[in-house]
Length: 127
Image (cartoon, rainbow, N blue to C red; front, side):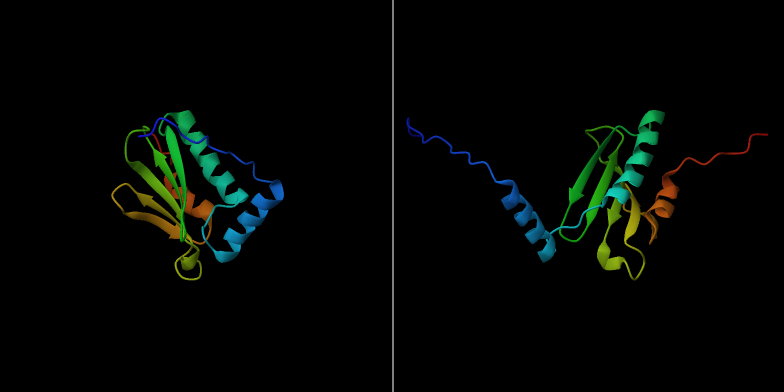
């Protein structure tokens, strides 16, 4: 390694340039993402589960073909559930699916709120 190093030159990106790059990525279909309403439904369920103490961490992966919201019991473990959005399946089985840790597809459908109902706690009749 040499003793002299060149300083790193950080150049701020202009707001218009960032928006142009973002729209160019969307036009080319480089990634899939959750929209505001989908994310609100997912985070609403996540908030209730965190308050109950069942879930503690999450991760969002925006990939080329799918968007994935992973739920963790602890930050260092594997994902308990994955909520996936795959627009390629929108006209077939439904774009949304909930997948368990072992890879079992628990529910798949066209309506995200109905798909998320599989993760809701059900009340049992007490006799």
